[in-house]
Length: 556
Ligand code: GLU
View 1 (spheres, rainbow, N blue to C red):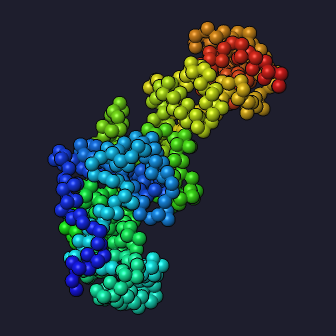
View 2: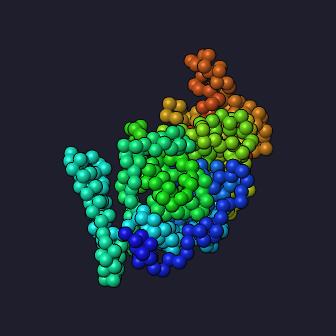
């Protein structure tokens, strides 16, 4: 077969050569050891939380080494494509602080290695497709896409190893060998009739032979050589993932391909294509799929429908970016938490991220743990930072609360400052959504009485204590003076001044000062639990404090 002639017939318009492309996309001028990484999502309008893990690894490895982190949009599967999805991806990743140096941005492409959207690179793929035909490595198949789908189904059946897998594999092999048989006349006739073709690469491997390849996470792997012809172009001329991966990652000079483990079974095909194309393969890291715990504590994959499967869900649920990133780091590098404890004031980005410390078996996403990390992160913020975080969240998720917060920043900040800044800060918030229920009683319009006065205490005593409290309460008292007054009230109604006195001789008292504080707390906040009562009263002021207590007495 005259392969040059065949290539000319199949790709009459391709004039560019691979050499010209090598010149157009030269080796990058980067410092020794700099890594070039990318994330390459398909624009489906959904960004899986699991995707944040490889994305973080890519970003860290690139930026830690003085390299380049770029975004490529893989839109070769038009059936899955959603309009505006690329913009969605850049926005959400930017929100999580994963800033790209290059690639698709909201304002078009940035960088010298584009276009960064695969559908705009079809001419480039065809240059290499033509080269492979010229070298007798690739051949056309004039079938409709439906027929190709049938072939794929046959391949799948053989892979699944059904009862008849040997026959299935044989049938597949025969079909493959038949596809490879054709004459130049047949091609000319098909083309003249305007028929479209898909392009296949001829597999040259023997699965009995193993290729040794090092995955930077999984270690040395031995994978069978590929003996399945690989679809390079579909009949619309659009490449498959396999072909586009080899061409793009070579021309964009990616040094490290970090991607989901689901691509591992295709690695053998990819290495074959790199070899055919004369490209040096990148270093690979295959990251295990993110798992979660279900209601019964069993490990499960995140299904698309699960709340929390979409990265966007975390913003909506009110998780702050720092908390999610911090949590991702703890899962990705086993020594991160220890480092963080030793370097509490350092930024997450100062952590020396290491591939060696990554878990081979993958990450388990545990919301409880995320909440713990998040509570820690928020507890270290200033009141002003918390205020800004809540406002940012409420702006889209609870506009009414947003307006309330905005109407008096100083007031909201004074509430958020309670218990903040000391050695043991309060850890009330796992998400920004937790803030409203926490502080709502400070606002008359949100105030509700959720908890009742203790049933085992005498109502007359409660009333007496509350009345005395109104009489003596002075918002200018310092904390110790305030507490002394509370103890006096306790004594006056036959309660112990100190909890320990009560514990020693419980029969001697009707209760203790803690109970009195509890009456006041429930009267003022409507709850059994609240932040520091003294601080609460200072913020509410004498008038509102006594109004609420009076109302509570009337309800008794
Ligand atoms: N478009 C592929 C995906 O979304 C990218 C895989 C890769 O990073 O190479 O799975």
